[in-house]
Image (cartoon, rainbow, N blue to C red; front, side, top):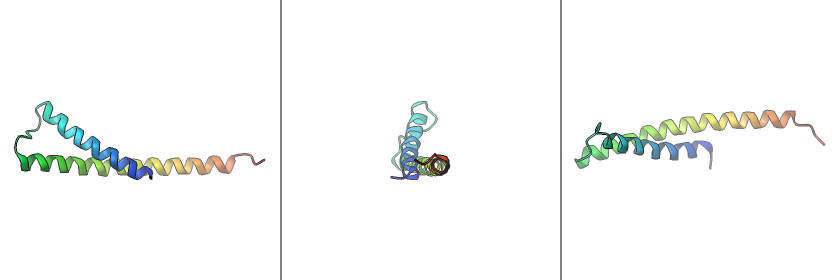
Amino acid sequence: MSATTHGLGCGVVLGLVIVLFLQQVGSLDLSDLVPALEYLIVGALIGGILGALIGWALGRAYLSHQAASEATAPSK
């Protein structure tokens, strides 16, 4: 599994959690089915996209750091 996939999964969960949290504090009304599903789907999509972008960036940074440390490692 890549860093992008991990970020996507975490972002979807966090997007759903944020929507449910906003409902708990009274910012959103999830009492009707269709608007509730729209809020949840939009939250999951936005969270997934942001999570995937963050995971992709962190994965690229990690791989470039690994390549740099392997290039400078002393050989035996």
